[in-house]
Length: 347
Image (tube, rainbow, N blue to C red; front, side):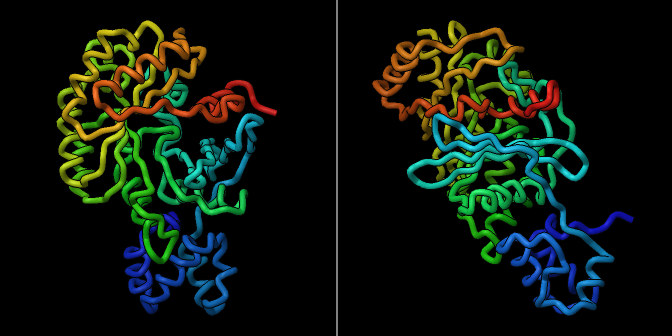
């Protein structure tokens, strides 16, 4: 029988677990804090437990671990890119980015991705499996330990579609937010989705005030279907209605991610339709110049064209920013390093 992985359990589950094995419930609180506040890695190091209890727990369960396989440091800015080795041999990646408001970690929620967006390196090998909550929190804890600094903000925007791993992501949010653990505010967490409509409604009903970020990338259903297969299931109208529901439930402004692709979605007609779509949605548009990959033969627009698109949105009263490119010299866009490592190996 497979052992219990203690750092996969939420606070309430851990408390109930101790009760189920005939131990005092408060021991669950102690173990939770050991794991998620102090980044404990071995039951043997939990000195507040008797040796008998430590032995008992070691026979029943274990602590899931990940290992830093390689770290890449940008020479342009302070961005750090991590390749992590999971216990089953799979590889994931995360990015640590420094902003004026503190250190932000962009983490993965799946090994690979099945969404199939044509311009994204994460999806080229398909979905291998979902990540467990422990593997998500361990990305945070490993970066903090490596840099000797606390993460202030978390972005679920690395490899994988978070809403395609819904239950595990919810458990991750419960764990990372809990007061006996890392106690990170929900308002400091952003979840990015390509638009799985039913799950957007489900997430809204959870009542968690995290920021929802929608990867839109085209205001036209036809073009969106070409570059984002998810669009064949959910229309833009359906997605925007779901986003409005999310805002009404959480009062959190929606972020619209829009990757600018030269000659594809940066035209005047794209701009006009985008304004029409988001005009009555409480949102902020984040323009992302395309980060080219070998499998997608398109280019980013010129800096002048990007600025023109941004200015036109602003003139229509739509809040807009151009994403600051970080770690471009270390392939910091999601999926690129992992794919290079798997295909060719990295030194």
